[in-house]
Length: 200
Picture 1 (tube, rainbow, N blue to C red):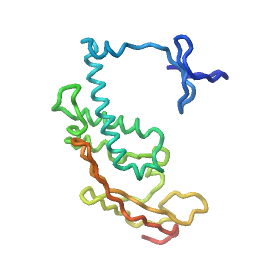
Picture 2 (picture 1 turned 90 degrees about the vertical axis):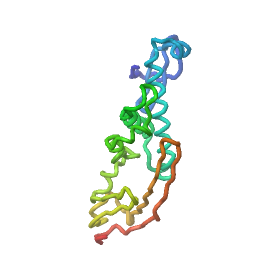
Picture 3 (picture 1 turned 180 degrees about the vertical axis):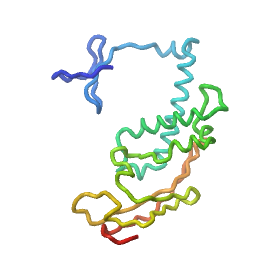
Picture 4 (picture 1 turned 45 degrees about the vertical axis):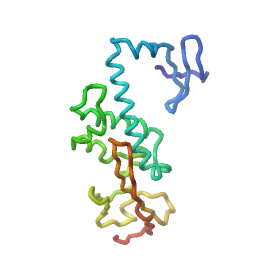
């Protein structure tokens, strides 16, 4: 894959080259690859089939989590959240040391506490990470979903655009079953606070 730097920006296929546009700019790649039938049946591509199956499983796990919190993501996710989350789910799948290669899953990987830790502090919007907006330390109870922001002073502890007078807080507590492909979520009431020096 090469990046197109000339003034001529085209899309489509020309001879053996395919031109396309992404958020990273105009790119070009050569046409080629292996036929799908060969990948599906040739013993030399056994590892490719295993990797493909596990990648699909990891992508499905990421989609399950994204769907669970979709209502919160609608106005807060960046355009690469899908690939970033799939990458983490792929790492979590690697903690499945029970299943044979090609059949490892996120659901079994989560049995390892280190796998669960990979999702800690995941930001659905990489362009506005929580740590860059909320400066006050906070704790979250894994059992109840309760969030505690100690000694919160709005004017000191959040980043806000000039002229803003209030800030709104909303949270959610989701339970995601990666084994059965189900999820449930509960939302907190919306809380509006005046941006002032009041110690909350």
